[in-house]
Length: 384
Image (cartoon, rainbow, N blue to C red; front, side, top):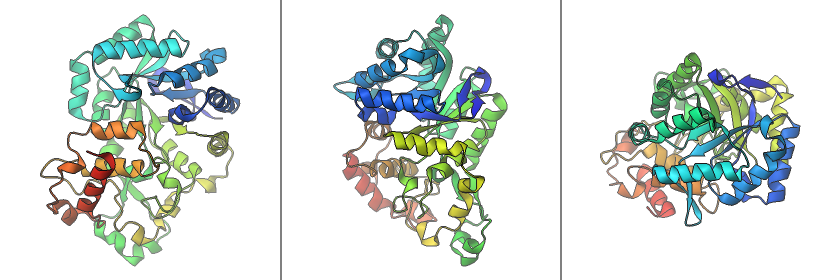
């Protein structure tokens, strides 16, 4: 296992880490075996955003014998009410569930206290204004958290946090589908045959995201990565927006080559998934080549597929069409919508059901996505 410095924290973390979400579906024995397996390979960083008391207990019991060897990202504002996960900025709840996290994780400190799921500038302003940041700073002063972090899927919001001077680590969603645009100036030229005949064709990262990565790198704000497999969608030809399947190694390599990234927190539901991820450390360089795969993707793979590029904006009723499509695609990966995806969707200012089917977004979309149809499907899927 190779290790990287977690930005200005100075902590040394494994470049492949353990994203905890799938542990919520495991028994206590399975959680222990997964964490033990990860530790055998030298993985030493894990993220626990989950508020479910059972999974907190199970993770706490599994890491207790070697707590000092683990760098734990634990989340503030993740709550458990009425038997399900939720997000709250109510300070009474924030404090209760952070203390619950400490107790159930059998520890008196969390290495990185993540302010959970801040995806808009307005919400960032709210966590600063309404006391969440102040509480995090007090916890740091008291030694209950060592460093302050924030999780986000939005580059604008995440950059605001990085520029604050208070945030040391940002948990951010990184993968080619969320990042890449065609490298050509004229986006429509991607449909020309000559484009796909060029084996060196690459992609250009969305400017806002590229700027965010580079800003964090300059400022010493570390990035830890979530959703490097796109909820698993990138690993299957049928669900990949590129029309071709990527491998875990290609997804991991893509994330690890972004500026400021210290660790990719992959989701593991069984031990073989850990084995597949850590194979990155000994795999030949040619197995990392995602660019050629994407460059040679069939051009029809893009037609009708949402790449979350945002060219459909602005929406007259202010629906974040790209985000709705992203969450709908992630939800389609399983029969039951994961609680986190449902909560992210509920937190949007406007939902798919607000769509007027005016067609303006479809005229602007370079990929021919039937947006109105997708909005109707998303509204039916989420019931909102």
